[in-house]
Image 1 (cartoon, rainbow, N blue to C red):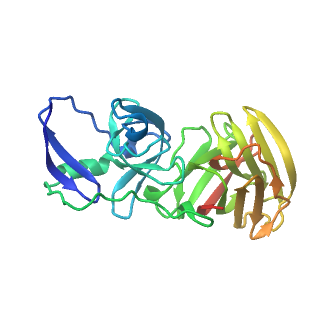
Image 2 (cartoon, one colour; image 1 turned 180 degrees about the vertical axis):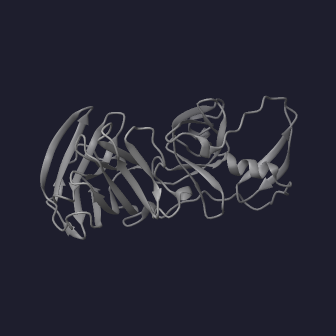
Amino acid sequence: EATASVASCNATLDLALLTSSLELPSAGFEPARQQPAAAQIFVLGYPRPDAIGGEEATITSGILSAVRIDDDGTTIVQTDAAMNPGNSGGPISNGQGSLVGIAAFGVRGSQGLNFGIATESIQGFLDAPAQQCSSASATPTPTKPKGPGAVLISDDFSSESKGVLETGTTTPGVQLGYISGEYRIAITGPQADEEDLSIPGSYSNISLAIDARVTGKTGSLIFGCNIDYEQDTGYVVLVNPAEGNMYLVRRDGPKIFRNLTHGKAAGIRIGDSTNHYELTCNKGAISLAINGTATTLPYVESTYTKGHVLLGFAVDRGSTGEARIDNLVVTQR
């Protein structure tokens, strides 16, 4: 039987430092911000002991979706790895077994929106003078209001540290990143003709809204919903502002595409002007509005009803171009 005592606490981080009579090996720390984009991570814990018992630990895996700073100045990691009550306080490690965070909370009613305290803030807690623990009740799990119109995720691209999209890529001929209050997706060389970005989380019945402008005559914005990356299924809308055309495509597997409908993108400002786009995938209907004007969609289609939200940019093979994106908002329908 082991004993432990509390050496320090931090109520804001919801962390406590324990000293124990056990002699155990320590885990190495790695800064969360130094992990590669979409790095694989693992979460260890005892989820739902009331349902499955708490005798053996459970391991889940996912990707490191984002690292950002919250309103309290805490560095947090976001992951789509499954987390449930009972995971809180468990380690989040990378593929080398080094700690990159401690599991903290998830957004109720959503999938893939789970968070942990990053090692940057954990190290700051360990380096700080010891603090006494409060006897107050435990910090409640943060939640967000749900229902039609509720904002599920957003980014005005004013701060890379608080952003939701990846900030780098190893794909030749592609440049990504936060620049001057916008997000840039650029195809700069013949090695690439498309770049897709996954917006963190898995959803059903949502709207994705952005402001965007495109340079390059063949450049097309890509919007996707109900995407399953493992099966390569879901719905994708392509809009070419230079020509004013749009296409709705259904992915049915690797390199299997079905053109559902196409037509003119009503309401669009032709050329490199900024347009406001809003894609809605709600209860089997897919629609796109441009600058508040409905296009040839909606299209009633319910083969796939839940999944990831996608945003991207494409050009004709051998061409170059870029998209500048602002004011990304995903809302519940």
